[in-house]
Picture 1 (tube, rainbow, N blue to C red):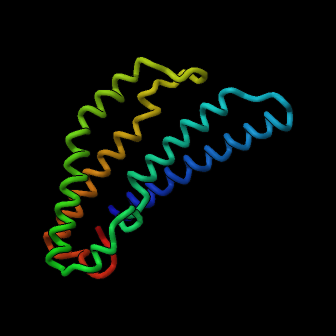
Picture 2 (picture 1 turned 135 degrees about the horizontal axis):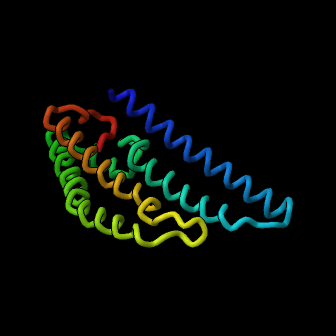
Length: 159
């Protein structure tokens, strides 16, 4: 199941990036090749960029690749690492969990507004932010669970 999710998340992220790249190429050819800029390409590229970045942060970037204070982590023992991991993920996951309902309400509220050129409801533009928040909550819960079991506390950075 986990392998299937990772492959699917990677495929979606790669597909979004490929589509964004294609839109970017169309934009360049239209603007500089035919001297006829296409307004929809600017908007589509921006929307796809938002999706690629937020989807990547939510589902693709491994925990060990996020910004951390490894100097402190590497200088303390396993017991302190466990506490640091649990407290850190309680803060991040807790804040994301508390912010999730308001974030969803705002994204859902934006259904009434559309993008200027394509007319895509802003709900669909900013939906990956809600997915990012859900991903943060799920990752934090998993990290707390593994820390309670004593896993992921070795010398390799894992907070």
